[in-house]
Amino acid sequence: MDDSQALSDAVCNVLTGNYKFDNQFIVDYTKEHYSQEGITKQILGVFEEAVNKKKTLDSDLER
Image (cartoon, rainbow, N blue to C red; front, side):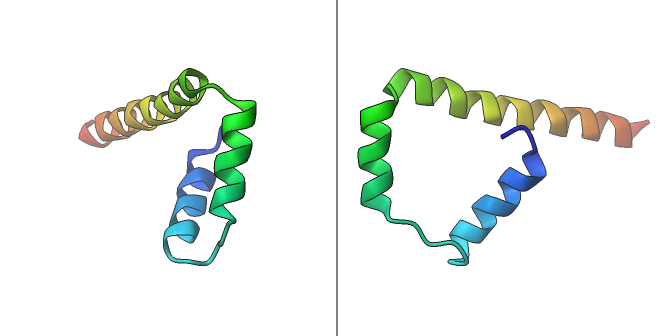
């Protein structure tokens, strides 16, 4: 997902209960199809991008 706003909206919807998932299915599917290292790299990439975007926005606001 390349859209950080869409990611933020999706996380908020999960946290508020608007989206419900079969957690065990997700766990089993993830274990079967992805390595832990691959998942870690993807998640870290998303957070690093979000941090960099925030730094850019903060820098723009300071000007």
